[in-house]
Length: 120
Image (cartoon, rainbow, N blue to C red; front, side, top):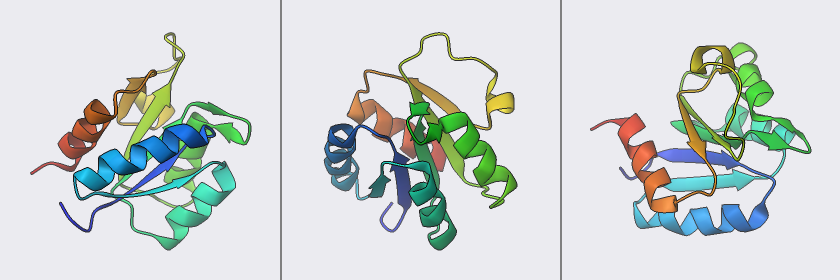
């Protein structure tokens, strides 16, 4: 799976730092950022197969971020929403994401979900 790029947006920098090692172990390049506008710019400039986002951040919601990706940038890759809210509103279709993952994150499971989305 070498050469596949993944973007992870979250305002918890320690979480992002931990995630990088798990993705590198599986030969997946993980770019990280902590605010929505930086993430939008990264998606404009890179070919990400999967984008992950926290649901609630000071710079905006994951739902709004995903909607912008789909509508403004016409992003067609896979989207994973990460939330600590066990009562996350909306269906996947309404919220513009492919997979919903609940915190606390098990990074091995997260990597496996990404690999499943990418297919064989």
